Image (cartoon, rainbow, N blue to C red; front, side):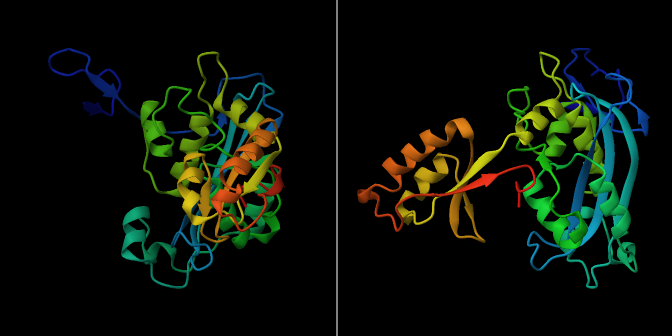
Amino acid sequence: MNIHAEAGCEDAAGTGNVRVLRPLRLTEGPTGEGTGRGSHVGVALDCETTSLDSSTGKIVELALRRFRYDPDGVITDIDAAYEWRQDPGEPLSPEIVELTGLTDADLSGREIEEDVAARLLKSASFVVAHNSSFDRRWLEDRLPDARGLNWCCSMRQVDWRRRGFDGRVLGYLLLQRGYYFCGHRASADVDALIQMLRHRDAAGRTALSEMIERGAAPTWLVRARGAAFEVKDLLRARGYRWSADLKVWAKEVEDGDLVGEQFWLAANVYAVEANPKAICAELIRVTPRTRFI
């Protein structure tokens, strides 16, 4: 497939077998969509870090951008973009330099404005990242004043496949919408996230509206404590994920699915023949303030 960056390009044969990509440039101000100036505020966030382990790594870049939306979940206004770099106090690895495009010189002497960042985050109804299970942990370690906020996740709380997309990786989603951007930089990822939240399905419903509805609903975190090693494949096939930190398989379940999940666990994980080391799973109530921790 030929890829062109300018609209209206066709292949020489005129077959139309071309995907046209446009550079993503979100401008500050009204989007021209929705009803008036939305009365609700969200803030999109992305972190670039020195490693995947928040216990040993550090944030080197943080980007935030607030947006306003109306009661239908349509983004009506996009605020100014904020981006900070942070000197980690140690050289970046070659892998991180290649991934982010940042160098030690880019970060030397730089520091996140903690008060400004925390104030922006707390001014919104919720914080959204494309992988909130990653970003929330890093952010709250770096900005304690921003702990305990409502969080949503554009990757996990939008059914992108139902919307006709293949996969959930942010850059790939954006390409399928006909845009390209400089990936693996915090500000570019934030703009891509906001753009994807504007996507409308066949019924006209935005991805933001879907995410907010799913994100607002309380759920249950089911931890299969005491599950025998031999049932790991069953748990994985059921949608459970292994937590290396807690050494347990876990899955988030909606209220209406909890009883069915408990019956399945009783028959497959906690039955006598499954050799469990506990009699039942651990259940933890999850809200937008406690999700993705």
